[in-house]
Length: 81
Image (tube, rainbow, N blue to C red):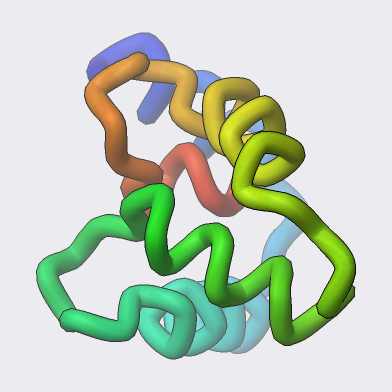
C-alpha cells in the first residue's frame, strides 16, 4: 500500500483540494454499501449504469487492472490513479 500511496500522491500533485473532494465524493457514491471499498459487484453495477450492455466478465478484466493490490477491492487510492 505504501508504494501505491506514493505513486498516487505524485500523480495528484496538480489536483486542487476541491477536485480531490469531488473525486472522494464520486468514489463514495460508487461504494454503495459504504464500507470504504468498491468491490466487483459495485464496480459491475457502475458499469451497467454507464453502459447497459457490459458483461460481468468484461468488468472483471477492468476490475483486475484497477485493483492494483490484488485484494479484491478498489480503495480510494486505486480509484484515483
